[in-house]
Length: 120
Image (cartoon, rainbow, N blue to C red; front, side):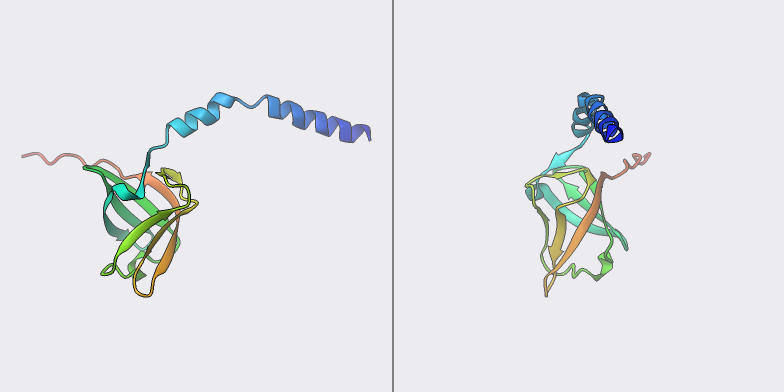
């Protein structure tokens, strides 16, 4: 019984030791946008889809499904359960489209690497 008390006390103390600012900092580092801001899609490779957001932002969506199998001649949309799409874990974000309609769950979202400007 004493052992159980020690375990409960240790768990309680570890919960108190968590830095609340760490989770706020992590959420501030995330970039978010809405699906209505997406202006274009492109297949990068089998598991990566590029999207254009707004005037110049580029993001890479990762899926476990074969992106080449999605019928890109039909309407493509990005659906989210939260209303916002943020970099990081893609949980709750899907690419949908094709005929018949298929759903491709997204596993991660990240900003595309900047491409260096071409020298003239």
